Length: 245
Ligand code: HPA
Image (cartoon, rainbow, N blue to C red; front, side, top):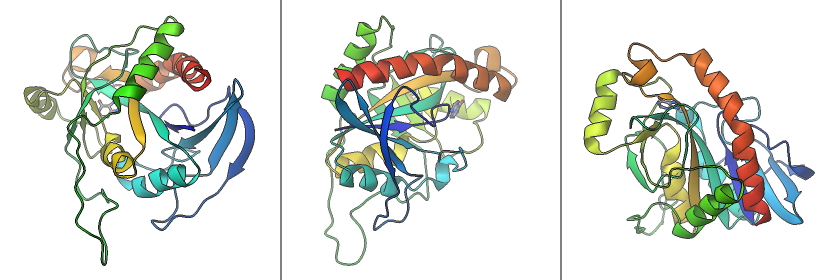
């Protein structure tokens, strides 16, 4: 079953035929909200709003372990994560949709593994390719079927937030090889890999990153809202096509 983890601007999947909502408890505490099960083209899928249904959970306070655990328990085998990001590379301006293929992790202090705690065996996962190639391909194919152009490669840097970055931090991220910057990509992707779930992200560029393009001197939060509102219908269409396909 496909799971969709919705980010900022996507707290509901309104095109979903809702079947049921369930609140679940996990050994790691509560996920961000109830799981919403629905059907698209006869196929069941599950939706979870990463920041909570009322958008009240900040990126560093999300219980990533509970979210991934809950989706796995619910029967998810693949997670399409919708992520709002800032664009570092010039061509990644507001409204561009991207399926990243690599990750840099600058987060700290987040519970970032299932493999810890009393008696847990030290376990390492391979993370050379952090996203599932198969699911990335299916997202790209779904977008093509909808006539939506997606950028197929990018390095996604995950920062701690909730504040946005300084211009100097963005310059450093660019030197490190980052193309996009967001706050929720990690540890979500690594936990999905630990849990044995396919995971890929559909990133929505909401703004030029700090110091770039129209964000040379500041980032307009109002403009971010407008861009997200304009972009999410395209994202929903791609997700519905992905779910049905
Ligand atoms: N930085 C980090 N996260 C973001 C940004 C940004 O510029 N825009 C949307 N999410």
